[in-house]
Length: 85
Image (cartoon, rainbow, N blue to C red):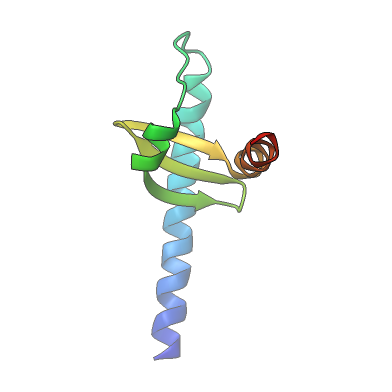
């Protein structure tokens, strides 16, 4: 049983790395786009979490848009908003 779990984990890890490479290319191309996207609290509340990448980014789908959120920056923003309130 343990071998099956490890095989699945390795396959899942490889699949994730391949998908991350594809996402990196798409995200790099977004920088060339002049249209800026601002996420509201309401959009984030309804967002679907897709994946976590290297404990740095959270990939979400919000209102049909795929976004990479810097999880450390988001954590700092939440802490700041708590201090301000």
